[in-house]
Image (cartoon, rainbow, N blue to C red; front, side, top):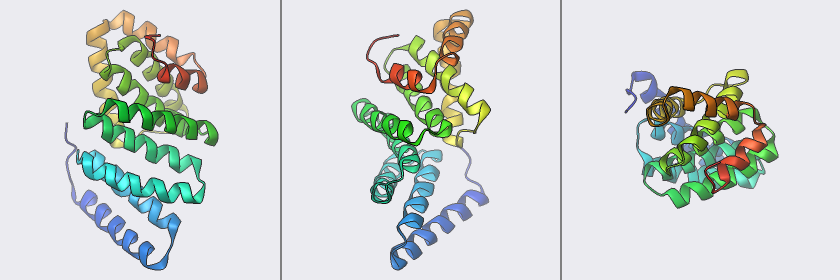
Length: 198
């Protein structure tokens, strides 16, 4: 699914690119990091995964220089999403492990939700549908209470849920989803990073 590019998207990307150039000129690391992250999000939405990865890598370096675990977790989740879409399961797992550590450090439900969404997609793509359903349940509960996922993540979640319902059947999916919703964020992250079906 490619999300439609509207005038707002074009204007958003143009403004973010302008902000990147201004930040480079002025040496404003925070604006540079945030603007590169925004461009990475836009590239993900448009399925330009290699571009999203490059932008996220540069953003990550800047956020790490700033010592910001909240935004570092978000950029690491973008890197994992791009890697997974490009077929790099090993890379996606490594990015998600780093994102989980940053999310734990930030203690942000928003970042927990973003990382859990990535872990659910990874589990689904790795042939672990019950674990994917549990992670979907854990992440959805956090998202309902505190934040909404980005457009790319919303589309991926909808696709993942539909496919998991088909694979597991409605009752089995619902049971696993509810089991996931009962987990704490840290328990869910640990489940997502485990190698067992769980």
